[in-house]
Image (cartoon, rainbow, N blue to C red; front, side, top):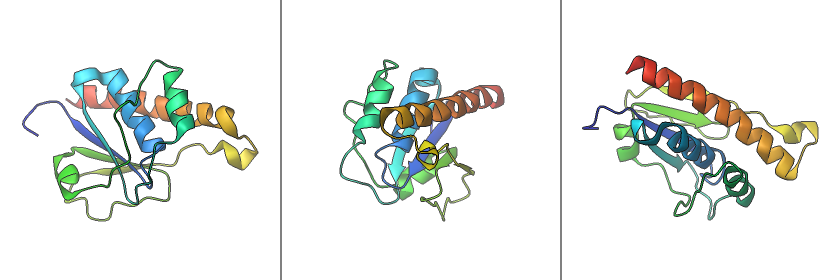
Length: 139
């Protein structure tokens, strides 16, 4: 990147839920202070409607976003790659640091629907806020 702002690439398998949530949350928290992208290792066909709705409850819009495949260019442009969940893997990160976030999965506790999605969102939000603080500290 030619800018001094750090660049984060959020990755999950389908790029319809968790990585999109993380990207939307980081854009909301960091504004222009962090370059944000998201991608999937096996992108789905649409965003998860409950993910979109749960972010909307916080005033965060994913309008214009759609699932997209991770590319070599995205990896090259990133200062940090964050993989959400255990389903996705970024094998060749070309020397870019990779973090894996094993996020809360409320469905394992029998929690479904919007209640589940809000818990997932809040877990990702706390991780994004911590990462944002770390990026600013390290800048």
